[in-house]
Image (tube, rainbow, N blue to C red):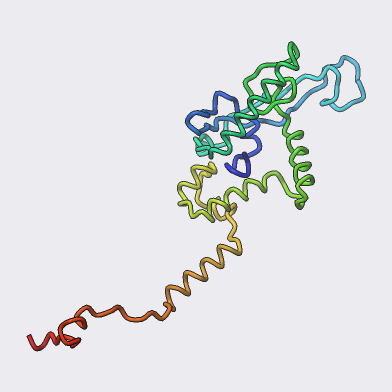
Length: 222
């Protein structure tokens, strides 16, 4: 979702199935997943951090509205993403049956095996494992968003359209996220060269040379 659509981690983890229209290949970004925050709930000090307290109490909501009006947006889904989401939904259904009464239905797209919203820290470590499994260099999860923005640049998507996909409020964000790659530089150089130094081509044939006797007509003689 991050690589193909440029969505922020919180936006992806905050998705609910009601936000996704698989039939019409689109989704709506409405909210972002927040990192959980807890306070101690034990009467006597348990000696652990609040997040590991056996009686911990949540002090932060699961989600919040997107940071800006530009962040609340609709995004078109490539057919490949739609197929992956359909597969993911079927797998989630199998997890729901396995969890049985332990399942906590919340309508989340990405969940734990018992239906709870996925912790951003868990998602972060899963990303790192994917990079290792693929034999790729280490990188931030947010780098996937930079990659998606650069792909839009390579595809020559108009800046205003790219802003709508990425959820940017200002055009200055394009300079921050879209990176000029070597293929783009090579394409620019080729276009400049083709414009200034046009390749030598034979002059077009003169149809008047095919007149009787193979003689070229003289317009001044008319």
